[in-house]
Image (cartoon, rainbow, N blue to C red; front, top):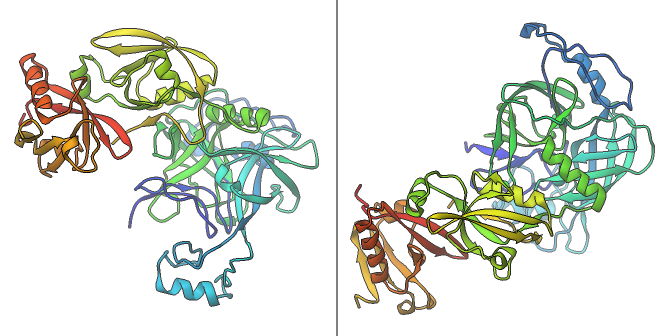
Length: 517
């Protein structure tokens, strides 16, 4: 059974997996629930809403003396269930888009059930000329007495109707979507009638690893449920987007928890439940929350503008490995390596080039690509930023005026004759000039063969990749690369940096000058 990151959707359309390890977001199409993880020693006064959750922690007690009842009593009124109607228009009888329970896309029975099913959960025939309405449910929490509600974007994606159900399970309100942000999977709703709602506030401090937390929600549609655990890790990257910086918690969260809050022992929101790591869709003790500080910034922007605008410099970036650091003369592996720049981007206008390494922004150290992406995004458009850059063996400073991140762009981090042809047996590679290979273009040197056990393959090089530069110099024939490797070996360098184009992606590979070592 494959391990997977699971979204909490139970039956209706789910967000597609974003990586080979599937990401399961916490919304549910049959029943979305909100779970709460929280723990700690509490000496908490009872307070009537709409006062925000505040509490005074008492002296430390043995773990078997802990009770979270006072905190839960105070915060659960602000935790809501969200029911969503979505229009799903099927304009094809194609087998690739099925919502038939229990069948995978392409199953021979799928077309039959699409056309003739209608009982016991099997959908009726999908007509091309009529939209099919889907009901989804999720969780959320109220953050103001006038009824603003936070949830996940994937809970309300394509919503036509949104209904908020309060903790008593009976009181309902209509709500509208104020704004959504797909890059962080957050959404802000507004209850359209009523006032003086119970609400909770975001924590101003990030919890430490080992701190107790509580998740409150509606897993599997069971109704308000509370679970407790601890913060297991911070800064988790699960491959869901360029700004991954999740809290990992072990408080059980399950399908239906999407958009629900995780609280600290003072009753403040420290995270928004978004994804779990699971082989089956149920909790195995690994859940992921959007941290409160990130969520609060996005929510404030959605409230003010209905959208989120981010700073942009227009580069593709990748981590600095030990080989890359050595080839560039860097003493540490910190920073973000510029693999490519976009034409007319702020980076190009500022003089930033490929093979530069950004070490810092406005005096703050950049540890890696994701720190750079988040920092630039948070600064916002039309902001002046000072970049500390490593180039040609020394540090240089560049001033750049940030642009606005386009919807379809982001700072990408990539994880991933003798004159015209040449054999690099030591590396398990064969190469040819690009202009000698049909369809390869005119620039660079094309890899025409790869030994799967060779040093080149171990670095991720494959047939069809085009080497554009070696050691910072443009190359047009295999002998150019041989010359750069020989010069590097004479200079006592351990590796040469290759700039490689693979499909539409451009990245750097550090190739050892002594592949057998």
